[in-house]
Length: 174
Length: 206
Image (cartoon, rainbow over all chains, first blue to last red; front, side, top):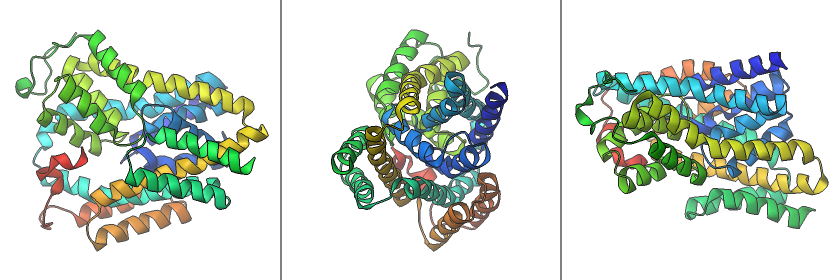
């Protein structure tokens, strides 16, 4: 148990510090480590807790707490969340103080512009890592496609769409 | 609680004028009602427009830092705003209250899931929820991509990153060190990119 908590803290603190672009850019790495390396969750559980994370309000990285729960119960959830949260937040706190020294530096724009395509590639890989497990037949493919289109075209609350996806799936597949 | 901070205060209103309970209430409410992507726009509505705690230029400065520092943008923004309002304590309170509602929700959902996740009806519902989450993730990627991508080099770099990570399972650290460095080098100062939207049109992310 203690070993698991320490491993959770180590893995998510490391990911926190390299989670450039935030959000889904870290999905492939988290999937690789939590399923393949540490076996904290199965790939089906990974997709399910990621999806449940979309139902909870707040930052998208909250699903990490659910992975921690799968590995070590409530203490695991708290440790995983603290580990993904604190390093990047402390870095942000420090950077906010130092920022004015970098303002106007041409490298500031270079970093932002240069990392953007890599972040997009990572987010696409993150989407793929979820879709490759979640989309298994025509119904799930249609649910994913319709949700994506609705989000691009309208301003519906995404949590509502995710819940509706579950409802439609139950109606058609149970 | 907040000794005068080293980060030149000249642009901010007097520090410490917002009480911790007000910060806790505001960010607790934000945390309870913040769903999906584009959360930075929602935070701006509340903090700049409805509360008037920060000016737009201050908020945009915070957003720019948030986008470069690792971690979810909205969380970094919360740290920034809390710090500007009430120093380190303000940042800690803002983060704690912003995260609390979602953390309680996800722990309850996780407990329910790991208890009942193999019941046939639950499995069927979760299939749809997972598929919908994949659609949500794709929509986020497309929306951000549309804003950030310009030119063939960007698409090539994004494609190489995708193949490296999704197909060859290259680790995030290696991808960032190699491909991120390549991206920064391609945009290095002096290699006169036609424009720097990041610096000239700060509204675009809001």
